[in-house]
Length: 193
Image (cartoon, rainbow, N blue to C red):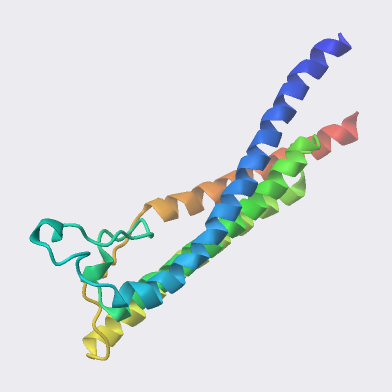
């Protein structure tokens, strides 16, 4: 009877260990995205419009690193600065979320899935996500105001509202509530045994 309980638990621990390993590597890759900011600020604004002067090469545009911009050569320097700030905010949020998820998975790995800390961590992810999204909107708002005052030119910058980040924030808050409720039930059950 005891052997039957250990096997599924060992299998679950292996999958949690794999998730932890993947999150550590993802955090490293995200941290490397900080190198994209100097690319946009310095190299991106001074690169030639096209790679070569040969008419056959005229359609070969300089590749970009950041996934939200198709062609950074159509952007002004101010737009590159704005995109760099958005990239910094996004990468910082990603690294924060991965750190919180690693802590949650370590609790799960130690057989403490319904620790009160896990609900708190999920709530922090929700607050940090909302703050990051509001910061991005703030950067865009300042850029739009400066463009309206004709201080900068943000040609090529695409600003828009997306519901996906806010759905993620709501999911984080919902999961935090579920984890807190699960923790309360577990604590009640531990007291009755």
